[in-house]
Structure formats: structure tokens, C-alpha cells
Image 1: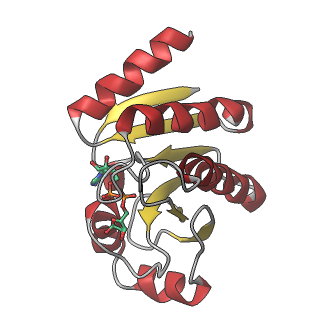
Image 2 (image 1 turned 180 degrees about the horizontal axis):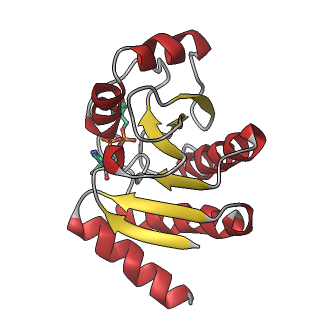
Length: 166
Ligand code: AR6
């Protein structure tokens, strides 16, 4: 089941949340900053030695002080016009996150932010299509997949797209 919610991803009760990280895995602004603040310094201590993480790839760590048991740190592309493989890299970031969640073996619910659509400036409508496409491809492997949007514009975009697909 795919759910669309407008929320701070650090408040969700799911097995794993996905972070929109950068290659260093050491934290940053936006959703990355919120996740590191909520999880505590142990998150960076666990994640940084797994890096640097290439764009389009992901790593998994415990969730530490978060409600979730795991954080999957996905590195989406910086948008630079669309001719540098950004769409493919964003798709791979989602797919790698799902693969790591499946391999972990006990993750039944997973929440994603709109990777790359903040500081990395990926156009929101196209990012939503790519995100929902990946979620539908892995829908059968999980009990709950949550698309967690922070702003109303993104939440409405996802809701419209989902209803046009059903
Ligand atoms: N919960 C859910 N979504 C959020 C939250 C939150 N607490 N806070 C922001 N968003 P961004 P990026 C949304 O910039 O574009 C960091 O510095 C936000 O509205 O967090 O992938 C990293 O370290 C937007 O729709 O990530 C990297 O350097 C979406 O999350 C860089 O930013 C993604 O925005 C990654 O940039």
C-alpha cells in the first residue's frame, strides 16, 4: 500500500525512513539535518565510515534515537538541467533504497521524502513521477510505503499523480 502524508519524516512510525543525504553521509540541511538532529550524533558516527556514497546509491544504518529502526541514506542528484543523467540517478537512488530495505529482511514499512527536490533543485513534478514509479514497482514487497511530503505543494502533486494512476 502506498500512502501520501504531509509530515516531518522524523515523526513517522515506520520501520525505516529514507534520508536525502549527500555523499559524505555526515548530515546537512533540509530533511538530512532534521533526521540527524532527531537521531543524535551516533547517526553520523555510523554513516560516515560507510561513505563516500556515490550519487544514485544508498547505505543503511540504525535509527538510534528515532522511532524507526533504520535510516537508509540515499544520495540523489543535483539538478543541472536534466542532460547529465539526473532522472536515471534519481530512479537509482529510490531503487537502491528499496533493495537495501528488502535485503535487511525485517523492514515491512518504509517512508521516503521527495529526494533531490529541495537544495538539489530537481523539478518537483518529474521527481514525483519517478518516486511514485519506484514505489509502485516495490509495492508488493512491503506492507506500507509512505511518500512523506513536507510542503503542501508536493503533497498535492503526489496526491494528483496517484489518483490519475488508479
Ligand atoms: N521531513 C520530510 N521532508 C522534508 C523535511 C522533513 N523534516 N525537511 C525538508 N523536507 P532537501 P535534497 C523536504 O533539501 O534536495 C542537504 O543539505 C523538502 O521540502 O532536504 O535532496 C543534504 O545534506 C524537499 O521537498 O534534500 C544534501 O547536501 C525534500 O525534503 C542536500 O541537502 C528534499 O529537500 C540534499 O538536497
